[in-house]
Image (cartoon, rainbow, N blue to C red):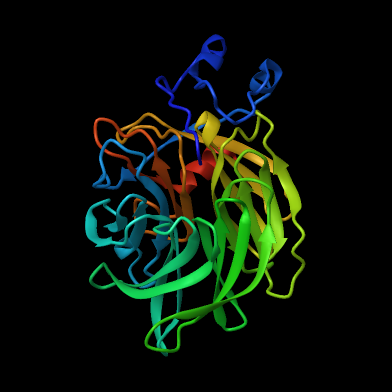
Length: 360
């Protein structure tokens, strides 16, 4: 995102709504009717939070990814970006276990795959250190030690690296790199050697600044957020159509610009929800994966760990994560964690399901 709304008060009256928008903001200002038409957004509270990132007094924390330990879910790990400095590894208590200096890395994702011929957890981050040439920074997560090891970087085309997501494709891992100008490069990785390699197999394009993305491997659909426009869907296959299908528009009601992080909650063969950070009003919107229909909105409200605002990246993983998160773990970046630096809030997914009265 380019311009952030600095919400001094998180709960505002409609009379004060427009006063909280900075002059020069590029996002379209919603009408009174749109504000009044917003779907209810019941609040859930965070059950935990991570340590703050090391970069203070800056927009620094950005995007999380979740590794679920299938044998001992309570030992699962979180990888989160400090987009001014590198990557942090946290445990489920929120304690920082490791930091690796990677410079300006923005979005992060991970996948279990073969690395050098053996099973491992691959972590990929969008590398913005060169604003003219996008790169993918690749790491291996040591799940026992909770540390990251740099494998190398792979070129991903011209432009500034911004959004990123991973998906399996035909026995390989593909990276979907979203450049800041809306160009999406699909990169096939080769992890068989001592250093990673990759090749761009095709490109797609959205008209303006885009970032968040997620792939549903069941349907092989790629979802991308165009920040001031809305949600789009592409065929994720390397030989698929490069045409975009609109899922939802920024309307000042269900989605309020910027549209930021995306996460999936897959249920069954093709059901579940796409979760979206509606950054402009500090909410999260859900759309049904089966047909794209709007399914509800929620917020992370005040509680022991505080509420969230101006959320960039989000992550969601279903399944048992131990007693605190028995039905799944939802994580949201918090843009205002004062008096500390930014961090990530942890929410039990069951709390969202119950608040929205969703039928899983």
